View 1 (cartoon, rainbow, N blue to C red):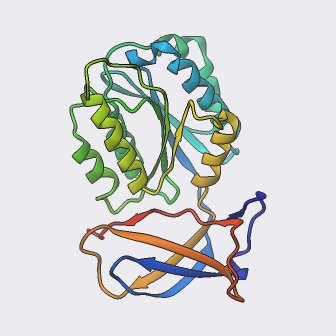
View 2 (view 1 turned 180 degrees about the horizontal axis):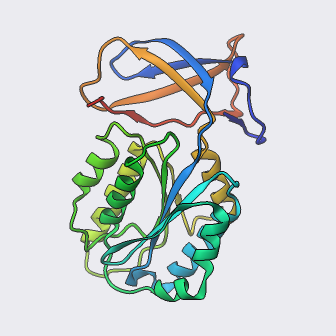
Length: 271
C-alpha cells in the first residue's frame, strides 16, 4: 500500500474491510508479500501506428524499462496481423540491449492488420506456464483488432475465467479515423477496455491533458508491485464473477483519503 506522497503505509496500522457482492466475508487479514515482477509488454506495430503511434509506444517502453529494478523481468510481444514473442522475460539491462539494437528496431516498422487479441492470449499463455503472483501484461495500442484468429470471448476465458490471476494494463493510443461508421476495431476497443477493468488493471489514454509518459510508467510499476496481500474467507463459493470492494481505515476508525488500495474489481469462481 502506498500513501499519496509515495511513502509506504504499514499494514499493521490499518484496518481492512472487504465486501463482495451477495456474500459475507470473514477472517480478513493482510500480510507482506513480495514477488519477482514479470511483465510482458505488448507493442502494436500494425499499420495504424504509422501516424506516430510507433514513436509514442517506443518512448513508453524505454521509460518503463528505465524505471525497472534489477529484479524485474520484462518481455516483449509485438504484433501486426501476427504476434511475435521477440524478447522473452529478462532483466532490464538485457531487454534494453535487445530492444534498442538497430537490427531489432528495423524489424518493427508499422505494417499490416491488427491481431491484438491473439497477442494477448499468447502473452497470458506464456506467463501461465510458470505462474507467479504479480504477473502482468502492459498493452500499448490503439485497441483496434481486425485480424485475430481468436475471439474476445477467448480473451476473457484466458484472463478472467482462469485460476491464474494476470492483471492487464492498457495505454490507449489515439485511433485513426475510419470514416465508415462503427467498425470491428471500434468494437474490439470497447471489449478490450472491459477486459482490462475485469482483471483489476487500469487504462491510460494518450492525448488526455494530464498524460505524461514518465509519470504513467512509474505509476504502472507501482501497480504491478504486489507488496501486500489481503486474504479473507467467503460464506459460500462463487458461482459467477462478483464485485470486490475494499475499505481501509486506521484502527480508530478514521478513513484516510491519502491511502489507495489497488485490487481486482472482480473475483472469479475457482475452477
